[in-house]
Image (cartoon, rainbow, N blue to C red; front, side):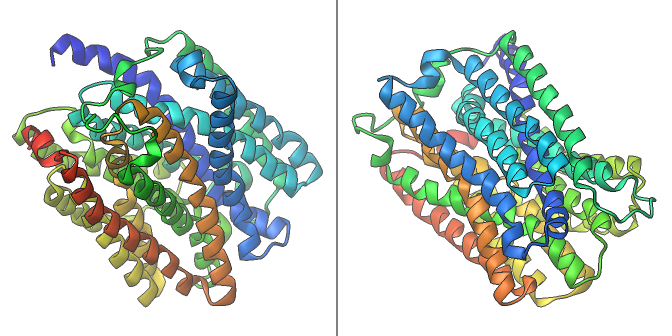
Length: 478
């Protein structure tokens, strides 16, 4: 690829990742809303997880609406109106959802709050259907997974900042003695967020993003394009389950953490935000590490960046929390845990199936350690799940759409549909917590990671039988 081509792709990539930031900001902010709503509306742990259910099930509903419209109009909706217009439309829909926070806060309506989150996520569904394959398409397929990982790193910059800003809006500064939770204080940050959605929609409309990139439709790994539907590919079917359980364990680990820290460890709700921020920052740390190949093909530079990138991301977390006047002392020890991530990244050698397997096993170990310990050791263990979830989305997504060719867009829509796992599995863990304990409920996450390890092993054989070998394809990057 020429230097000119790389610059052109980066110019297109930069405005695209703005929407990734928004997804992360809102998704992680939900983890602050859950304990706030639980106390304000006197909910059980299972009922409080309806926040996650409303948000993540909207992705499925959005995908179904998209497919119905495409069927009724006898043509793919996104291909018809263009990628930029689709992103802009998704942002406008999300902005409409934020407007509901105003009457919901004024009337103290949990139902309206959930409706607002549902509509915001409905817009996100359309955005994700466009943005994920587009991120892979803006360059060679060999580094598509790394570009998606990088976009995920921007997403997690949003997840790191989101909980802190929403917590500040509700409770004030970290040094404040205020422990009262005002539902009305939620409306301002979400109305500002809605205005930002509209602004970015206009900016994307005039950006250099392509309307109909050919690489989204035709894959370099297109080996079986005679099949009639994306659902004819086993890597996609198994990958859909993979996305379901991956988003499930990622979201449920964080969304149940506040209740664990409050009930079992005695934390105040207002003091939990930095730990939720650390969890989502862990995904940023891992994704910045996994994206280094997208910057350079030089092996020596890649090795150096693999150590610089994670600690640079960790530095962002520390800086943001310092600016919010949080005590950083409890977080310095986390620098040692990051070394495990770096070692795992080296061991994966850029192969998405191998990376998926290694990181899933580490996720299982982290949860088991968290369940078998107490105090801050358990908190760090549960938080480190974010490190091991960090690169799983691009791994699953890349493996699932490999070889789909002209069915790639359809396959992407099916994968986005399965994001509902974030809501359903969060609710399931909340239910298990109600009948056992929050500590024991993390066994749900262990089962999710176990399936992902199985998928990593199974999909390797499926793709090899189709002539797809990622070791051969990406060996030049190592």
